Length: 389
Length: 80
Image (cartoon, rainbow over the protein chains, first blue to last red):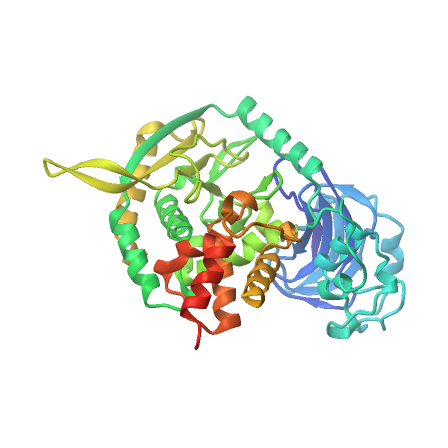
């Protein structure tokens, strides 16, 4: 038996509003299934479950705002509890009245037939409808089981000029960034390191790789940097984990968060889970999808909630270096400046090379500059042999 | 030419719906004017390749940072 709780989708989150249940009592869920949508400062987040089993009862009604850790659903598990699902012990006992009614549902009950009060709609569709002030009940869905899709909402009304075209509320996001970064600068004793890297081997490998491939199969430099960072922190566990009340806990898994800017202001740093285990082409697909969903305000709980380290990459058109701020409770953030051609001393001669500055901000409570320097050198070595990544 | 320009604009709006509707001069850099990044340019080239069937070499990607450059390149390298 497990209890699915309101997840913490970032260090700054104290409460979330349950927007919608995507599973009903009696339905089976598997590890990684999206079972609910929760509204946060970062937009509507699709929340995943990390236990396989059958939903016994939903304990919170849509529209309710509850603190992080509040029991949302009971799951009769057939596996071990993990992630957002905790054992029964010590859970919140003051359950809302919905619990009693839901708990008597027969366990083998099928999904109830669709009724007007239970509209099925994708998070993107819901967000867009809210932005445009369109009532979902007035829209005919064309998706599976009549679910309302983004395109249904798009064709349902004309967007007013002032509406946000994504699901992100800029002022709420700014408050969330302020809270997390303020806490970081207050609590985390940052130290900073910077290292210049000759990027000629990486870039020439990349252009050869891309030359032979159709546009959609190509790679961006950012993906190579992401993979190199993931492999490197996997070898340096003192930079990959969480600093909490009881001290530093390294993480065995490496989930690298990528800082993704949102046009018009704000950013989010969702993770690609188990980053180092994916091939470069897989990572490219995942990053494309992640960037698109971040900008539409459609992130999933696991992407927001558990990055173990973050990278911030300025891309082609940024500046030389950055000194990033750690996302608590993480203990390190790696910054990649824009590669630029520079004079470079090579074997007693002067050469012109594409050079990139890689920086590291470390939490001195969890790691120190000597190890940080080794980490940056390790990234340099990995980038010199991109074919092995 | 007007059709190709409309196609390029349509694809920019599809890959970055948050910048739609796009009104942009032919010579403006979309990275400055619309705040598109390398991922957006990547998606634009992939989408134009899929729509037109014209193979766009990676080395030509720099031409696609303006609408005028993209249209010109597609006209020069398109079928017939």
